[in-house]
Amino acid sequence: MRFDSARAAGLTEETVDQVEDGFEQRFGDREAAALKLTDLLITKVVPPDDTLARELKYHFTAAELVELSLGVGLFLGMSKVLITLGLEPKEMPVTVLPTPGA
Image: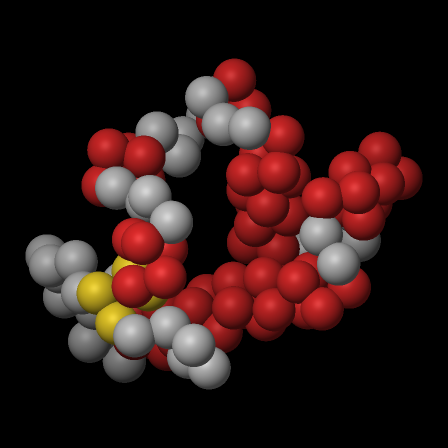
């Protein structure tokens, strides 16, 4: 799923395909910080270390960090529910949705 505001800001499927190991070299500092937080939320589930915490506070407001964290958490939770219920599709087309609140 992609939000239309992300598309309007320049998100392409080619960009999405670059989100893999080593993304820090492919993206700007702000995007890399968001992806590091996403990795932390999905894989380690521990508070960020001091270095990442400083990086996040430099690039994002408190409200942006809440929005980013909750967004990742909601999508992660929904994917786990779908997997548990056996409802995860084998293939899923990209769906572009209006950005909530925009």
